[in-house]
Amino acid sequence: PRVVVVGHSMGGRVAMLLAAKLAGALGSSLPFELSKVVIEDMDVKVRNKPPFAVTWEPPGGDFDRAFTSCDDCVSALIKSGYDEKRVKDWVVDGRIRNTQEEKWWSDVNPQTRALCYERILGSECGADAMEAIRAEEWQENVTLVVAGGTGPRGAVC
Image 1 (cartoon, rainbow, N blue to C red):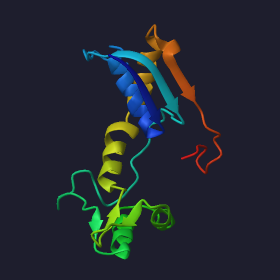
Image 2: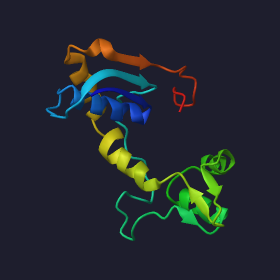
Image 3: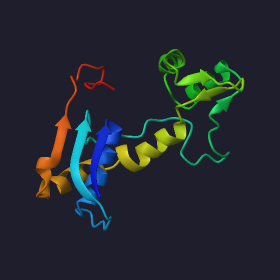
Image 4: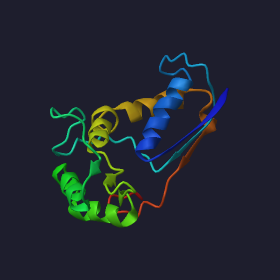
């Protein structure tokens, strides 16, 4: 089957890695034919893992994303290294929300964040995938969309 791979921000890096594998550039033998790759707002800069308490394999077990109160959820995320204002904004925009079971749920998972830094953002894999794709004959099927770059870090997210 033919596939279209789409990725935004860190998902763009994942999309580039997948596209490179689908094209055979990294030695993959997946039974797919790449039709198009669409990447938005992605860079290939290696990012150092920021210091925060939760790792992707915490010794005490998984990060429980269900909480008995909003305050407990906010506190746990702040202790995990997220900025307090950012966490409180997640309450407003619904990434932290009250469920029908009278619990609070976090869409944000610090373990996922740690894993992403360890395996994707903190490595050369984005640049490696970009080079692999650049070397392929199908590179005209790659569409790169760069958003305004007006955010605090020069990007929209």
